[in-house]
Image (cartoon, rainbow, N blue to C red; front, side):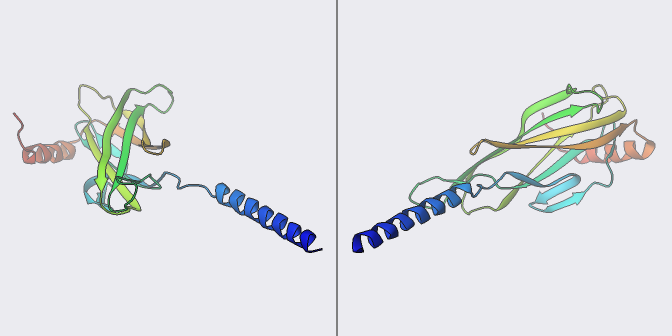
Length: 187
């Protein structure tokens, strides 16, 4: 009888262990997520930005995008320590006309966050800008597709934002000239 009870107990223990291991395996890892995606006027840090009013740009304007993300991989630089972590994020961008599938303009690694951080970050941001040069753009409706890639985990997430590009008004030209007069001259 003792052998039978012990055998049943062992079976129940192994079954419980198998169920527990299966339940732990079913728990998903962190999922790369874009928590904020917007056009901004300026950025000074994580969640520190001035949102752009509307999605209208004039030819000659600077388009600044802000992407805030969570769920990215952080790998310890030393397997025996949790003092420093590697992070490796990148953004690819494709600008399209809504009715077409093919991008008009695309760029890989338009901005990256790569290096060592000294704390476990729960979120971070990527901000970048590009100029709507008058020689390269026509007025119209566009969609910008952002692909955020976590190069350490292999995850990626794609999101889009629509915007309108118009001929510049007198106010736009005045604003653009103020921006260019305050930019540093690069030789």
